[in-house]
Image 1 (cartoon, helix red, strand yellow):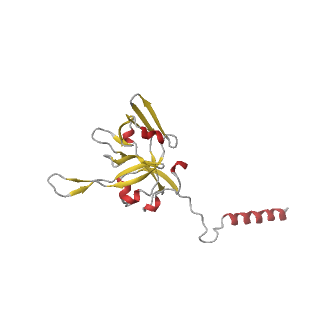
Image 2 (cartoon, rainbow, N blue to C red; image 1 turned 180 degrees about the horizontal axis):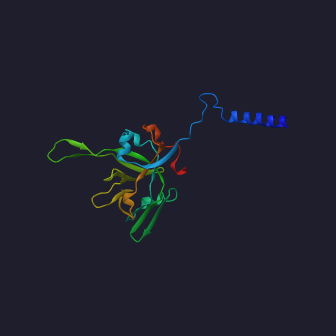
Image 3 (cartoon, rainbow, N blue to C red; image 1 turned 135 degrees about the vertical axis):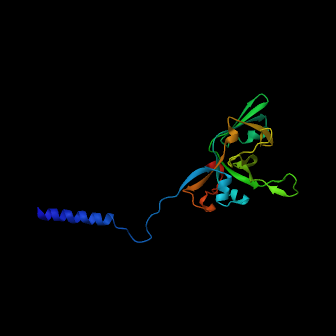
Amino acid sequence: MIRTWSTFLLCLLFLLSCSHHPGPPGRRREPAQQYVRVPLSKNLIKKYNLKEEDLTQFQYYLQDRIVLEGPTNSLTKRVTNSLQMQVVRESNMERVIFEEGIPCIIVRAWREHYFKFFSIQKFPTDIKVRVAFDDYTHLYLTFFPNDKGIYTLDLDRHGKTEFANKKYFPKNGSQNVSLLVEVIDPPPLGRENIRHIRPRSLRKY
């Protein structure tokens, strides 16, 4: 009986020593990096020190559904079968719907310049971005920082935005929908910590 208990205790001690063994140095598994989607903003661009050309290298997503209403446009017929986008026609009006989370890329990022009052010097605006979906780079939406610095639909003085060379009114709060980009959580500094575009067609996401 004593021998049995001794054998049991030796086995137990052996198992405990194995479970707490630190292993060889440098072999500890690091926790997997987690990405979270955050709005593209002036603060994020400043924090990661991003330039115009850097913004075209990342993957973006629509934060919510975008609904546009405007005149009929034959160009949009060509993309309804390959994108998460719908076109609903009623009489001489049409409604273009971009679904929440649809992947997109920035195909152009640039600054415009303007003159300040009583000045001959041109001053740059914030970065404006042109967003395309799938391979149809001529069908794009333009985003610009709002009053809070978040990138939302760029509107003209009539409250319209451009898509497929036509002007549309954003509906159902679509003017407040932002662009999302994936960053490591918690996000250390460095543009390498933003998820880049994957090397394949966006329609496969």
